[in-house]
Image (cartoon, rainbow, N blue to C red; front, side):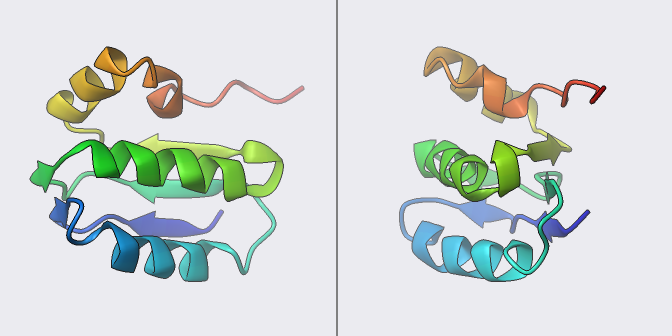
Length: 92
């Protein structure tokens, strides 16, 4: 499973560069993608937009996010995007 670690800052100013890095790092593998959000300290809704784009780009929309800061979870819930951060359902 390919892994991409988000940087400490993910805002409108940095999202485009992080997007390029993430897609480059993850696109080489056709298995589910893993994003580590554990280092995130400063972020805005651009972080959620990035995760949504990565989920759409991931093979079979299989994206898992680990290390989610509580504030990011709250922001996702406020925007109705908390499904992005939910644990992956077991595959049968």
